[in-house]
Length: 163
Image 1 (cartoon, one colour):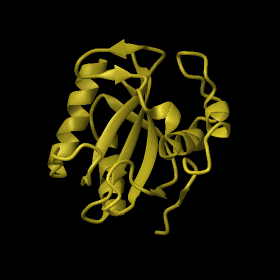
Image 2 (cartoon, helix red, strand yellow):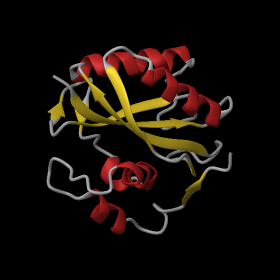
Image 3 (cartoon, helix red, strand yellow):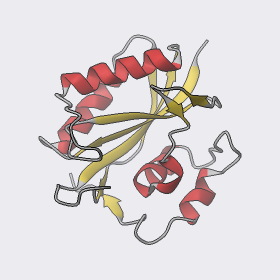
Image 4 (tube, helix red, strand yellow):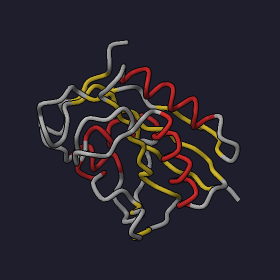
């Protein structure tokens, strides 16, 4: 049985556009995952420490046969291939892959929280998500379109990446 999942991608090191595009291709080639949709790429200011480059962000929609923690493991393997180093919270990174949604499941475990706990407040997640799933409603009943409409001006300081 397959489940629809949404995955956020972000990078601000070592050619971020290439990092994100390569990761999308790697996700697509995992047996047990079928890539269904890809948002545009967006350039966004960093969350947290501001003494770092802007991020390139995107969201993908997939169908997967993996249970949530196995999907997380596969995504973390891709991060490791991209030399992801976790030293500074919200710091610069070659690649960040986050599971935003996994079907309509709500998961609260030490390794994984779904829906992603910050997604409702982040324009760099919600706007690309709306690109590919404008009618999507979160498990708590929140329509993505309404969440985007409620974003403040600082949350909407994102722009399509110039490629």
